[in-house]
Length: 118
Length: 396
Image 1: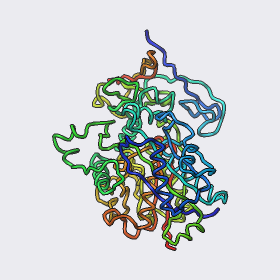
Image 2 (image 1 turned 90 degrees about the horizontal axis):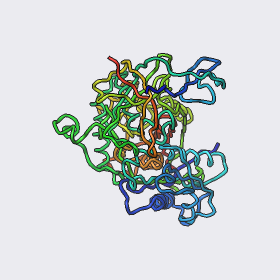
Image 3 (image 1 turned 60 degrees about the vertical axis):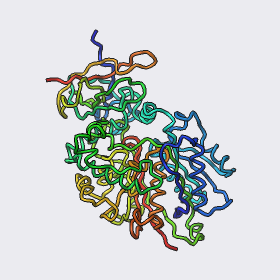
Image 4 (image 1 turned 90 degrees about the vertical axis):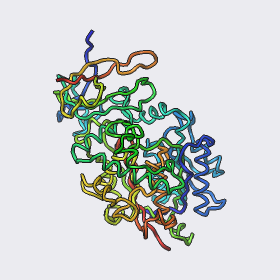
């Protein structure tokens, strides 16, 4: 079953700046009221890396990770579904999904994953 | 505001110190600094202890209270200061402000960390706990991972190459072989890690485009300083060091929220504040200790503090301008890359190394000739909390 992306971003009601994650005051104008928005559409890959020395909790050889910008300007980190960075390029389009990103205390933790688009 | 001097500096060799507890290391470094200051049996007014991981790695809290007791410095005021990898410089800053304000006259600042008693897997996770708990940490991001993403952008924007990064690895590890306090005392061979068929085996990718030898080691270690008023320093009759300038700035917690992630705004601001306070400019600096947890950071910081224009730091390193005898010697100690990076201790250790440089007491092969002004950058998080100090030699 396809799961909906469960992160919420915050658009400042005063100046329109988009924040993710949450801040109590707008990083630009100090406004305290925000409209909750969802990341929309596909995303653009801003930067990425493959991590070979993983932290406790990741029992795998490597992990491809990156930062993206959605079509409605929400920026977020997530895991990238690629076997190697050779398949990736700054600026390429990626498709977001909401999937398990790690296991904690025997339970799946869901988060953003991005699939490179042709 | 009163001027503040440093009259004592001490360090213990960094590395893997299985035989010592965290408290042992903090005590040994403290005694060295107290003895160097010539305090004898006299006490200090306050003790600031920089440590990031005692609670997580040693299951120990209230470390400063324990240390004053162990060192028989009772009833000195005592606090533990946790500010990620910038804890060390934060503790020095608190000492600076307390003396400058006129409240205290003499303060012991000590920073240390014991990281090697857990596996690399756990140590990597411990350091990653400074990333955003919802927007970054769950994905498995690590600090080398952050640095890898930063390096990719810096390469794209400023034309930094692996050759530039290599110049930092070679220089700092060469200097580490001359430093008896360094964790890594092994010079690197260019072919062995870069342009031979064996290089990918010896120097595998860690977080591309960064390789193993672009990263600092995980270290145990501690360093300490004694800060005091200039009046007290003058009485020693020996050359001493004054804190001429200081700056600190913060930046967004997540890398994703920075308008230009290659712009280390907190480094620029901290350095500008420090230069303004010291009434000095980058060309006045004789020697610098920059926070090279990753080779790219030495290059980026050398540009952001104003030693080189953006995009010129890597070329300057390749041209030898940052070597001993060059235009601005950087990380003559070997830096975090070779001296090591016991996270809470690093900011203090950088200043200890600069104090030794400014007192002109290092062996010829490590001493910057006639060093008068030194600069340090202690970089917390991924550039979200940065401190810069400018130190000046005073000859009584």
